Length: 352
Ligand code: FES
Image (cartoon, rainbow, N blue to C red; front, top):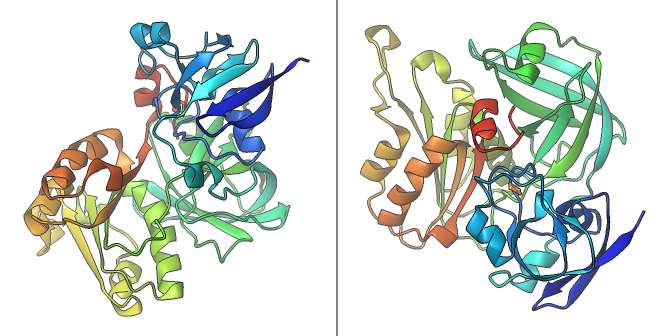
């Protein structure tokens, strides 16, 4: 096995990458916090300019890395294997971001402690970690789970706060014919042993205490819930609002806890909204697409930061709304949940 040096400019930071691992995997293994999202060549978050050296990029999709970008020397670091020493130009990083502490990524053995339907198509799963017995992670991060009897991994965000490090909680949306979600919905049993790996992801609450605007839809609640639970534990004083979108009343869950944060946090408001109400919903709250509700309720959010979690279309629709309300894109942080179908159309292989 060959090993190559990867140099990150302008920081002159250097790390070693084996020829059988991607540059991103090698960086994370060595505690270097490069940007990434799907880790499967589908989202483009890990794109960087290779100014010297040779790379094997045959796994990169032409959607996330277009031919002209490839010709200019850009690479998707999550699917680029070094063929020589490589120098990357990270023009828009700063050093503190690169050195930001990330939990150590490793495999964990766990046992299923609870499986409960919280709506007709969302299952709350709790896993007790066995070996190692706890995970050090940041609220907002996710793990990948090995789907039993397959070689496929699927990503799920933790809903529990980091203080609850021995039992991890996940919200699994049941997707018709979804490999992992079908298993969870039909077969997963209490006491069953599962393998997970993590923690992954860079979606987390920023330390600077700017007002926070949270937006989520469906199972996108999980990482926001982890963040809110931690904020409640520390009585985080920043003003915050959580907009949570669902189709029908039957799709909302954990409402007592979510409204309860208004008492547990010094300055917090919860705004659920339904996009497809029917008379039997008996709903007197906000209605419409969650992005429209945000636009109506927060016309001016200058100085705020926003944290979004949900489907690709929801996030794509929310970003311009937030920009119009005065939140620059550099203060919008998001975790896009790609469905299997979306990720395949992107050329990647993520999906839940
Ligand atoms: Fe590399 Fe998504 S993280 S393309």
